[in-house]
Image (cartoon, rainbow, N blue to C red; front, side, top):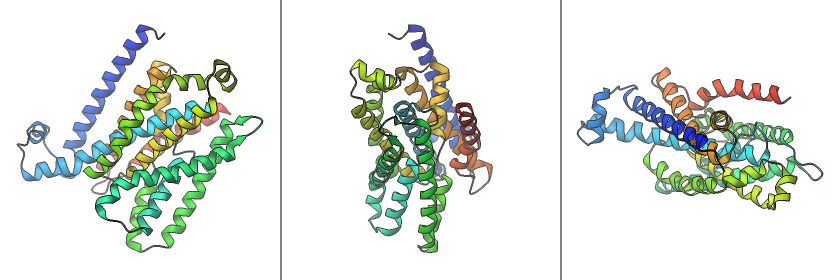
Length: 336
């Protein structure tokens, strides 16, 4: 039974986060290389803007904002699941190598498998999922020990090792392809939001529409896994089965995000921590808060980054890392 005051607090926080996302999105629509007066936004959205205004809003900025928001939500939820099933506060799909596995699969697919442009966007999440799933299975096998189970610190160390190995593999791939294709990999490594068109939104949206409600449905399972393996088994939970199902869900969410944003880390690390600090550790409460925090954080990072240095801007992945890397070090020292 969740206390009514906590539920009320969660609803207030969700409303505040929704307002922050709205304000950030409007700011993202009006600022940029070609600025638009804020009083023109509503007429443009109602179809009463000029051709230039409508092109900037509907073809350039709005798809990017939606993609960024969805990717932040997916990364935050993926991190929340990983932290829950591993009982490791340092787990994040970017830090432990899952994003790198998805990214290298996308890079190989993009560089070496010619395909029609119309089908490319819709195959990306599936390709990223296969790469991320293979990586996650390898990390799980290397980190798992029969006598002690899945050791949290070992999981992070193995994941970091895989992440570094895949970064090296990316460099090898760069040296083997044409110069004009290298720009794609460079964008991915920096965490640049590159899937900024409507087909990419339609490609990842079905994944989120299925996986977000499924994760919320499994919230109580995450609570039980957080009690520890022996306690969860004592209650009657099929621990390995539930852990694998939730791992696949986390991998799919991370893959969907990586397929359009590149290698962005730390969103999945910070968002669950901030959400738990606000509403407590109950999954039924903090998961929804974490998703909005993740979406808002990535939206803020991308909005600031693309306007800080014009016209190219600073990739969102770098902007997030400015905050996330020191926070990761702090958590690492705290656990040591």
